[in-house]
Length: 183
Image (cartoon, rainbow, N blue to C red):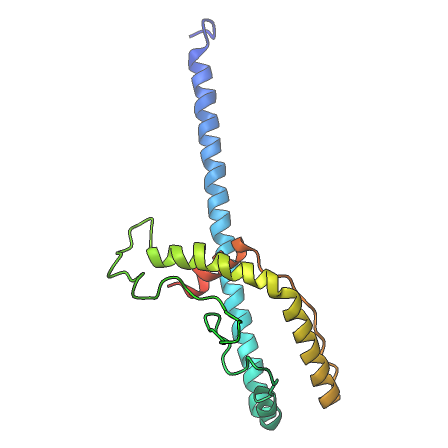
């Protein structure tokens, strides 16, 4: 072939090269993403282990102060139980699941490769309701934690600091639930 004609062979080669290049980019981005996930996971494990070591050191070196910290009491009518599904009986109703563990069990609904009744309920239905309530209660929660911090500072003479943080997004919460709580 002298390069004349319709150029079909060269054009097909360019299309094949583009497809191959696109495939290579997709593969690299997938491998890169997986690598980042592994690095993040390993970093979290190391960070958790370091934190555990530091806490264990405090527990053993300052046992009395540690015991005082873990037994610190904040009087409240809700202190007996911090469950989200509790009915306090005084008009305050917390989040109550629509289904229990047995109703969503794998025995009743065997999971397939693309669907698990329990995982779907936990991450797409219950979690939405929980985040809805978390966003409604966030202002009151932040105020209460700020008051507890102030009380600790006043009673102990220390200067503990408190910085309010936002409620997690639905996407971040789903990722956390799927990676850390659902096995």
